[in-house]
Image (tube, rainbow, N blue to C red):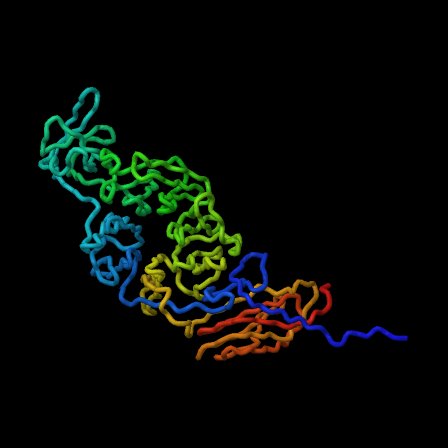
Length: 547
């Protein structure tokens, strides 16, 4: 009697990873994705490669902010005792009143800087105040007269030369002890008087005015600004108002009698603070966390506002707003979004459900770079590859958070804060010194001595059996001086280094594994220098079912 023949040998499974798919922090993973990484780029997809070095600028002392426009880089640089300078391509073109974070925009070759309320003439290289007129009158040299004409109350300010400084139709801000007027329009008097101005009494607060009087051009306090339609647009959270300057004039926000070339303002009724503002799709997008106020039209009599209840910009992430290829990207409360009109679409499913904060964004034309603080309180530079739809973390372990980004000719410039600890002999309680430094994304060579790593999502092999892993096979290119270390983990045990190597070129590397049987198998690759990984294979045999 013939007996059935037993199969010869044990069948070995030999799956391969030929596509490396980026970061995935969710439970719903697929082979080739990563649960953690540092210093990894997706530009060479489907291969795996660490990102390049960043080029460090040494021409600046303490960078406060950075802005790019018309193929030039503008840097706010704190020179200490020499003051805060605005520099164009490394050359100082003027002084600012304060350091710190700025909100900047350009109209008519004029760079407007808030909260300083300054304007930099980019053609002439001069800096001036947006407050074009300021007059001060000593105590006793001015007086107030109250009048009434046909039931309308007026206030007349009498002071030598004040009628020459502020003409009918001009806006004026008044302040003295017991007197304040935020922005009043000078009325046309019956007879011209160089030593008096006529104002409507409504809006003027008076209570025994005295002391010195200051009269100046009113400029609103704006939390964020942008430029659109040759106007400066901005928002003020204290009065919940959207402002637009007069056409081509960033110093005129209140002369509403100019008609369609004049300024514009609208107070909104929505709750919560403004969280950002930007020009997009022939309009101005004014953001709150759950609302978008979109102002459309070309001039004040045509302006109208379209309100949408959508996922807006997260508070503190106003710098995440970046337009790439006519699509707007930003950091919202519940994720990262792309907006092309209509309703925004989330692109951050693979980042999980944790709440990230403090988004600062930028682009090199092909990727969206976003510095965020993760739910554990750690800041990292996340990168979204627009072409392949993949996330990665290009920031290195311990790398400083980026606080501003600017795209100059598709070269991304990034500002970070370098913290220097006090000297050992410093007095107790001495705080670390924080200095702003500027890096350029492109131009640096491959990573040299800096460490990078990537940790794959666990391999379960789509079975409930325990597996016995026999070997790994890796095909990769390594430049001279680069190193690679391979670590593995069985189930939840400690990491075990199974292989290290320096510089091999386009050859398969076979790594034998001496492991026990396990349900899941996790792989981690660490290295320094430039390494291109093309394929990773693994060989295993299936064992008994888990019991």
